[in-house]
Length: 443
Figure (spheres, one colour):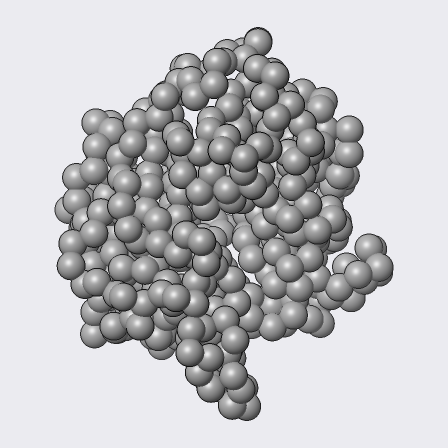
């Protein structure tokens, strides 16, 4: 039970949906080998845990990961290349063929590119105030960066073949000072009151980029122009505050979420879909066009999710870290069809965050938060406080209609007893592990 007014009852929607990320390599008749990369954001530059895919089934509780301390690998590189040290490894992305990983640091502005085969960091770029999320376009030309407190939306030009990564300052859109094509300030009370960007969701053409915003509302950009150009705008009455990192494309629609986790808005559970054929290749749309289809609007805290294949359709799972549940959306019909609990003998309070799926579609892996979460927790409800930090393993059942937790791979970062200021009641704790992001890396 969470000390956050936790409810075990039926709740539609669950944690925010996993970013669509890069297109996956096509599976042959035999699923490819893979690894699960999970990151503890708890201390300074963070720690990477790499699990062999063969170990991550019902026996994940016995899996022994490869452990890489970013304080000894990433920090020296960033200091050498930018003059500053990275803090709080927050979001992990991949390029389309999984040769490179992209890690963003939310307490600083660092974006780090890795070679996934060698695990070595290659390039560190400091974009400014806060790199909340950095995700690759499906065509591998760009990485789009949500510079949260800098209120900048930025673009890095990428060449993975030559390991060349360059911040394109001319492409930057200043979300605090820009004006929309309709002549409306991008940031304005009652319209879009706080334009700190949270996550980019990129469509399959690599052109449309949906930018979620902390204060509510949303902007849709043409990410290929210089500077990036607004093609659609939404106000806070149409997209609620605490825009999330759901960014899943299916059947001609983009799925986007809003969540909770702030003092002003501790619990929020929204999922929207937007028809992709409603955005122009030239010009721009009137405000709030095309209108979103509101699939979920209720209490909770969505922050991660994943697409689960089902014959010729697709299910979208969205995990709720407040209520420990997953909402299931049939994206072919564009409706919510199920909700199931993640409470089990393996964890009384898993608090799922970002998720990803095995290449064969049989298991979904969820980042499970710790007892002292360093991001996204509202002290009044403790929405992001979890009891079992690590990687949750969820067996996909009924073709993706439902699932069941079958194991937890535990991750621990013990410390001397100290007060956790990010949790309501400021308890004294000895566990500092806080798993926020993970990715399945196909080898």
